[in-house]
Length: 271
Image (cartoon, rainbow, N blue to C red):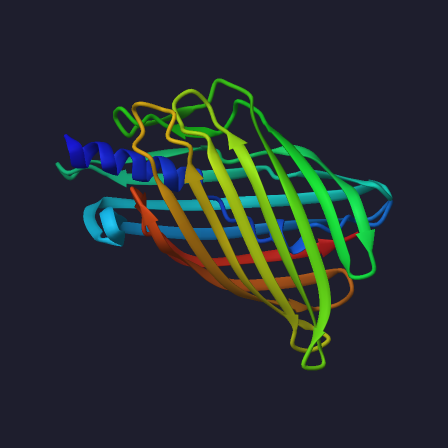
């Protein structure tokens, strides 16, 4: 029963571990007024182990997730950017008895805005708020099954970005910290994302990213957990409007969370 509960919490953490390829690219900066960007991403993750105490990996029944994500942002004015992130998930889980359960539906989806608070030279600070409608799939920690959330949830985060030249190359750093309110079944989370970007050439952007979350431990059915996922990718600009991205991600550390790994790809369009 204990390991079943741990595995259920692992599925819950995995279900909330979307890594949209575009989210940190925009970062603290706002889209120019009247301009925007659409990024469609496809990722696959697989895990047969979870992180237990002391980062020790524990074998569990397999878990697979296919995610089709879309990130949209539009500069409604110089001071505010409208943001939307609809997604679709297909989640496949196996039980200890060998049964396989497949669930498909709307994934982690949010809509909101980012407002610039301060900008001076290469530094920018902004605040972003997202509402998440009761449409997405949520895991029930009591039995590990997936259902649709029935509550509006949200997220509020602070973002700081700084651009500079590194050894003659244009680069930037983006740090985001926030708090996510989940539904009644899932724990709320503190979030921290870090992106380091370097323009290796006029057409190639290299991204090294970290996505981390830690539960606040307020839900009795969900053991407290945390995870830190790393992603490395490269974005190639075909022209001024279209770009393509390829990369991979891996859960580097955690507690009561699945060790996910897999490839990702995205297509970017600026308008």
